[in-house]
Image (cartoon, rainbow, N blue to C red; front, side):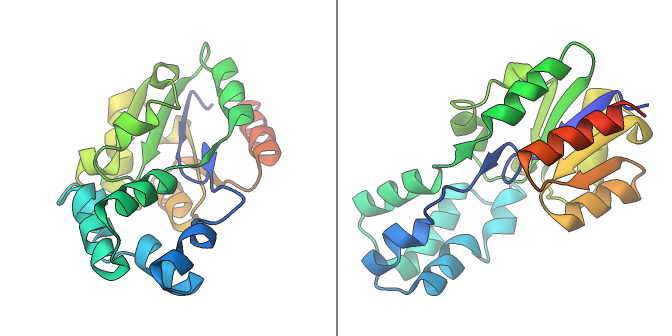
Length: 198
């Protein structure tokens, strides 16, 4: 019987904007869209920052070595980078679960994420929130799942985990949790309801 539900943030509780970041910034940086996306979304330093080994600022310093933006432009890009569409329908559904279930967040992120995300999500809705930079490790490391389970006082067999990446879902399944990959909001709500009826 499921008594605990843990959610990822990016790709689950929030989604990319309809207009890609590269549409606004690639040409401005003198790059094509693929080159821009490679620099911004595939930084070789991201995992170190998400593990808390370096700051999120250090990742942006590294990105800007290739983007070559002014300080003001870089700050503007960083602001645009954080613009996402919050899934209000899913968050409203989660609110209906709070009286009966333990709720958690487990998300890979770099330093500062808790502060800016708290502007959009009421963390009081969740019993525990754990970011990878705080844990010192990223998904799919099984220890980060064990850490959030311990924080929640939950057991794997009674926990449902929702993420948008198949390998993170598989890691949860390997630990004995129930888990599935986010596709759409409607399908996710339907699947959660099905798991809770078992």
